[in-house]
Amino acid sequence: MTLGIEASVSGCKQDLIARFSESYNGKLHNGILIQTFHAGNNQEHGGDNEVYRESDPVYLYAAKDELWSKLSALPERGLILIQTSTGILKQVCHESSGLGSSFATEDFSVRFPEFCTIFRPLNTTSLNNLSDLYRVIGLTQSGKLYINQELVKIQHYLFF
Image (cartoon, rainbow, N blue to C red):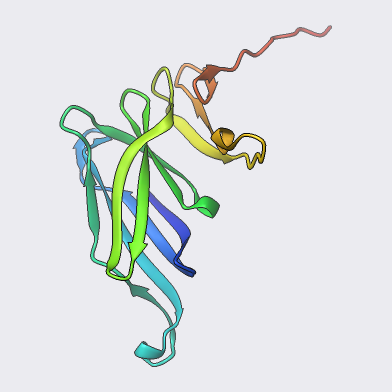
């Protein structure tokens, strides 16, 4: 799986490409590869409109006792999330300086109670509560729907 993320870093737009490294065990992975690019009219390269690689690939590896299973993103916020095989979410952190970019992972504020085969971050720009800036929706293989850690209870009604 490959994700393309457009992130604004230090006033210029960068494109981040994130994909899993080699498969470790079936659909589980032990790391991701991140590459930054810049698209546009670059005077150093003859003024043509092309895509330029800005950095060497960066590899981020899972902790020894965890495996990563899914990637998802919120492109307009430059947010990349990784889900472990147990439902823990990790956020890819990106910092840019004059010397280049650095990447790391940290635990995200949301953890699903179980693994979700499909998950997506949602942008909920709430000015009243900054902790609710992101919500993550997840769907398990058995059909349970989670918003953040909360199970969504769906009422079934029969109409005749």
